[in-house]
Length: 121
Image (cartoon, rainbow, N blue to C red):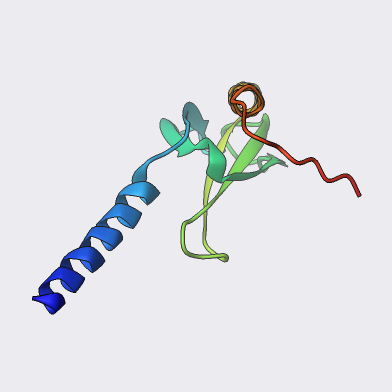
């Protein structure tokens, strides 16, 4: 009986962790655009956005404008990333959405009545 209960608790814990990993705090959808002119849409978890970096397309490419590269860290790997390219205007929209969400989250924490210790060094 004990081994059955132990298996159940282990399975429940693993399932809980898997479900918790799938839950996102805030998803952002945006238009993608590559230097060859192909367009699309993507959705990312705003908490996994690591970097937005500016690049330029080659002179021989269809699109000549400056692009923003969004680098998303893959779960469970410090060396694996997903990269999206988009226009500069679209990258600015993404950053506005992410910043507004972060500010809302900060405000919610501050107004929750919990104790927050700010350790200035």
